[in-house]
Image 1 (cartoon, one colour):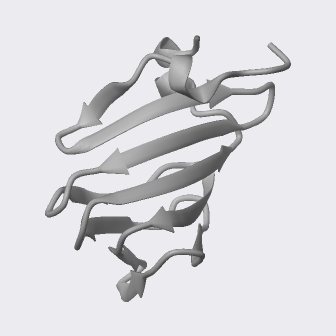
Image 2 (spheres, helix red, strand yellow; image 1 turned 60 degrees about the vertical axis):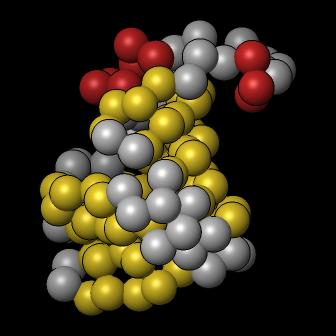
Length: 110
C-alpha cells in the first residue's frame, strides 16, 4: 500500500477512550489517536521504540517516572522496554510511531 486516505481507515478503540487508525509499514507502525478528555493510559512497557507527537490538546505523559505536560508540537521519545503512562488533560490528537512494527496491532491493518 503506497498511498492511504487516513479517514477511510477503520477506527478502533483498543483502550477505553483511545480511538485510533493504524498503518503498518514493513518496519514501523503509525497510530493516529483521538483521545477523550480524562482518558487514562495505564502504565506499561513494550519492546518497541515509540515517538509520540502531540498534534492537538494537552496530554500528561509519564516516562520512566518523569512527568511532562505535552502541548501541540511537542514530541516525546519512549525508549524500548521503558515504563510509561498517560492521561488526556483535554481531548487530544496524537501521532505515535513505533519501531519495529507492533505485531499486536496488525489486526487493524487496512
